[in-house]
Amino acid sequence: MLTAALKRPQAGERTSRRVASETTHTVNLALQGGGAHGAFTWGVLDRLLDEERIEIEGISATSAGAMNACVLAYGMTLGGREGAKTALANFWRRISHAAAFSPLQPTPLEKLMGLRNLEFSPNFLAFDLLTRLLSPYQFNPLNLNPLRRVLLQTVDFESLRHSRCKVKLFLSATNVRTGKIKVFDNDEVSPDAVLASGCLPFIFQAVEIDGEAYWDGGYMGNPAIFPLIYGCDSRDVIVVHVNPITREELPKSAAEILNRINEISFNSSLMREMRAISFVTKLIDEGEVESTSLKRMLVHGIANEKAMSELSVASKLNADWEFLTYLKDAGRAAAEDWLSAHLERLGKESTIDLHTAYL
Image 1: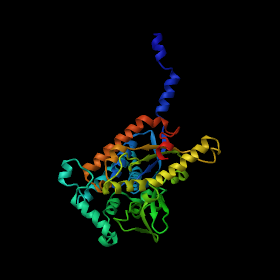
Image 2: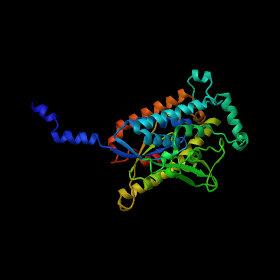
Image 3: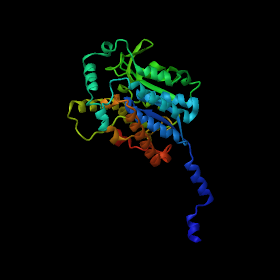
Image 4: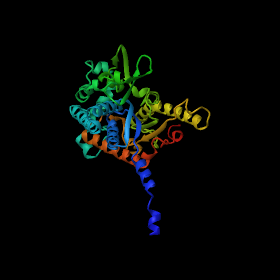
């Protein structure tokens, strides 16, 4: 009986443990862009929405991340967590349906062999050559973009306005003329703003909004963290990584080199901001500045470097449903692993070492 009494927690202990395990954590999300690789983010979001102890305050996003953000916010406004999960599933299913009419599909042999990168697809090779020789103003003079129709079928953009939407949105695009970042908030979000955020200049014509032309936001913010620092109350930022930061093997083929250049370019802005956050955090921790004058951010990351590093830049154009669901499952698994290891650390400390991860 004595042994049992020692093992049995006191009533106060049971209560405190239960309260701790049921604490609701308000977080912000930072969603990277990456074409079809955004289905990985879909999986992460799908799992986070299942976790009732997590509330989402704001989302900063770029390109495919911006699409995920708008669809999630719309679904949340319409039907809460389940509404968001359903909206995301419908969106990615529509993406796959739209891509079925595109020549950029894996060949039957590639699918049989489990290849996902499209690098051996004759259609992809022809398209890649076309984009190197001609601009989108030449090979797509009508400026057709199937993503516009998918967005309009999925999202009522009026529902994303501040007066109706609880989730704060910050979508990044790059101003072609000035080279500066443009962040669209809830009241500015529109189909054009989302398409601007994901406008790859070799594939699509620049998106013009209020007399300014925009390209993909990944060049200047993939995603931008500063809107979450200044525009949200929560100190916790969960970055969903789509583009691998590290590759151990030296790229040697033309495709590998191009792929690595793409990854470095689209990670550079995030790494710059993380270095600044790391610097400010060090100043606060060492007492060099008053903690009340600067916001001490808590940074977290959900990623699967191994799975994503096996994919090339070409696979970002692969919207085959089997591939998308593979990425979704990988995203859910990554989020599950992160929640199991780090959920209770939210609100208390960063779960990644900024200096090691980004410096």
